[in-house]
Length: 172
Image 1 (cartoon, rainbow, N blue to C red):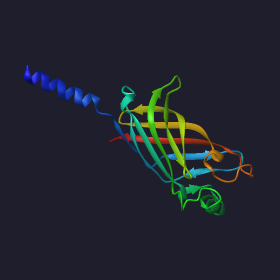
Image 2 (spheres, one colour):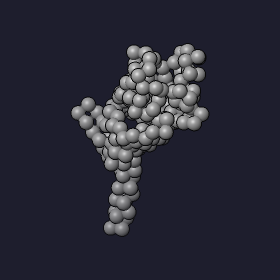
Image 3 (spheres, helix red, strand yellow):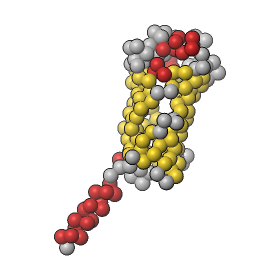
Image 4 (cartoon, rainbow, N blue to C red):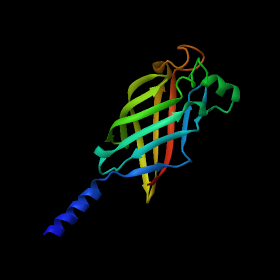
């Protein structure tokens, strides 16, 4: 009886452990609107995600602002300057989830998004496709840059920015 209890305890402990995923180097975080497009090429983060146990799920991401790549060196330099992202003072864009939920189209991550020293509650819809020990998270959402005091409101760049994050992962 004692060994059965120990075996059951070990099984429950293993079953309740959340699945950690490593973000692969082939990740892509792209942004676009009618005026500008590009990517943030340097990102770090942690993903703990098990579709069968969303209460243990946690997503954290950190984009390095100075890794912005619009395909134009002068535009990149301008984007990380004081008028826009001010990368020297605000070197990262960060997201930390507080809750993950299943939706009809996939999942949604509620949490805090911080850019340019401004932290706001956001909901980011995403999908997850698993293939063996690998998978892909894809998130598509919009951000209003003026909500985060990025650039001047009403200037030549539209406020609404479309974000598409494609994160290939592998089980740790």
